[in-house]
Length: 112
Image (tube, rainbow, N blue to C red; front, side, top):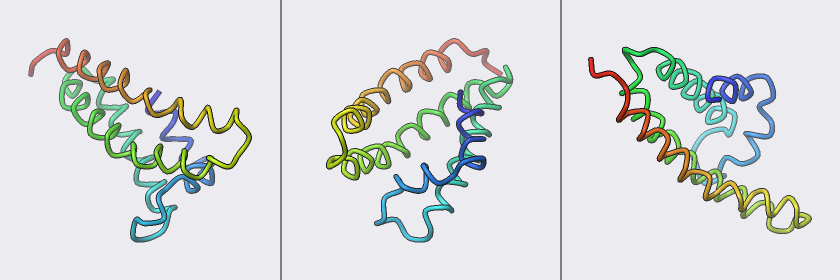
């Protein structure tokens, strides 16, 4: 999932650009590409047994790092039709199972 989403940051960056908080310094595209690289790299780490444990820890960090963009999406979409608002709000609690899954991967990954 992470690798596919990371590729999406390069194939279709505009939707990702729009949710980058304007308060961050620099261009939104920089953050879109940087998070895309991070997602592809972490996804690759999770695929390889020898890097799975640190990859899971990196995934947790990534999920926490992108949470402000999810909050910003709710703020930006608040005036949109209710299905869009609901979709933006629904993304927020999804971070919890993603983090717990990464913790489980870390716990069950072989120690190197």
